[in-house]
Image (cartoon, rainbow, N blue to C red; front, side, top):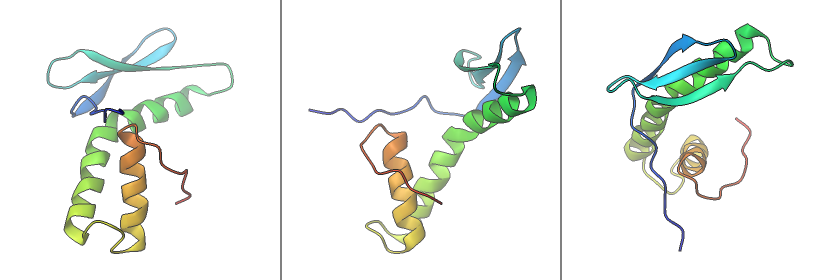
Length: 100
């Protein structure tokens, strides 16, 4: 039996930069939820952009869920199908990779 995962609710924000990573924290309690490492192949700017993208992900998930709820589930429109697939992947369900 597969249990659907639920992410830590947001909002999150990029708290600070350490020697090797950008730290993403939960805005409510200040606990770290992720670190985006700066590795040799990525610039500082790219790593920071990735950190901000991850920090925005809880709100983006909610936005997709609102889109699907407003326009109806089960593929009422092509964008809803895309949103449903992304929501499934965000919740740990198997879903095909999609190109937006």
